[in-house]
Amino acid sequence: REKKMLTGKKVLVSAGPTKEIIDPVRFLSNHSTGKMGFALAEAAHQLGAEVTLVTGPVQLETVEGIKRIDVVSAEEMNKAMLDHFAGQDIVIKTAAVADYMPKKQYQHKLKKQPGDLQLEMVRTPDILKGLGEKKTTQYLVGFAAETREIERYGREKLERKQLDAIVINDISSMETGFGSDDNAVHFISKQGANVTLPQASKQRIAEQLFTEILKEVELNDR
Ligand code: C5P
Image (cartoon, rainbow, N blue to C red; front, side, top):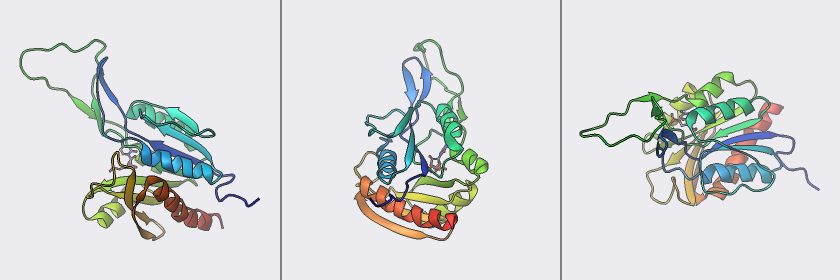
């Protein structure tokens, strides 16, 4: 039997939104469904990798053989990613992490008051940036949603977060991105790749992304 391309490799994927708790009944979150991250985790699993999937709250099932870690907040996702980072070969961050969280978590339900309410927000940790700083041999891939100047913003983020590659979601189209079954992306890498993957299912995009990633990981191994 032919050896699969990722046999013996460890792949860590983050997926989904994060939920930032305000009080026992309220939270802040976003529209991420986790589909792209789950598709990448499944593609890696099919290629023979040992896959760990760290996911925010989503409505998706994990296929057998993938190690799934459920988290809620950006801080929990940060901890789970840092805990599992060592020893990974490829790390892909598709999660739509909240950039801000409420400064205070209320233990009891906030009561309606006359007038307006001001909620103070503080920054969450930039998980990807932290991983970039900790990186030894991991091939680190970030995701970004842009509507314009895709290449310029992509390259900036690649450098600022010390990534090996960045996948830019074209969110200027209605058929792709958040919640949809399809995606359309650009893959830009430190080694100089600049590949456009036109609209296709998130499963197909995931396979194509691993083809690009593998070209570069194999070069590193030589
Ligand atoms: O800078 P921006 O948020 O657009 O970068 C997106 C990338 O950074 C994604 O891969 C996302 O998972 C990651 N990210 C992160 N921690 C944050 C915000 C974004 O890891 N707090």
